[in-house]
Length: 90
Image 1 (cartoon, rainbow, N blue to C red):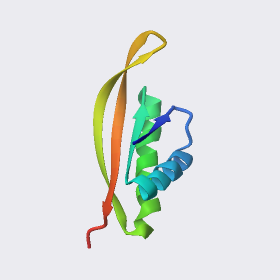
Image 2: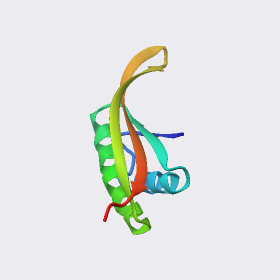
Image 3: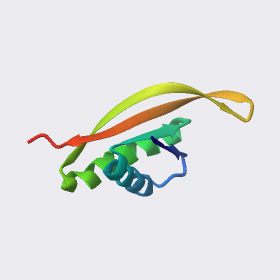
Image 4: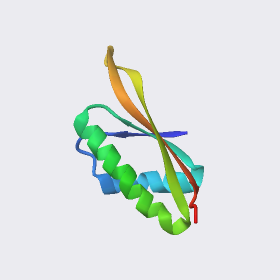
């Protein structure tokens, strides 16, 4: 499964395009964000991605979770969104 890392400076439309492309090819992607600005950009990107895949008759399931990461010999807490696609319900 592919992992996308989102920063506070990430452009939501670009991240959404990457999420949509990965969902079309793999049906599952992880989006990781550390810090409030990054989480904000990630949530916006996921919402935009939902609109991008709707014409393909797909919808999203999102499962958020806290994860501990080791960055520069320092433990950080990140938010990981596991995003899966499923057929759109009529």
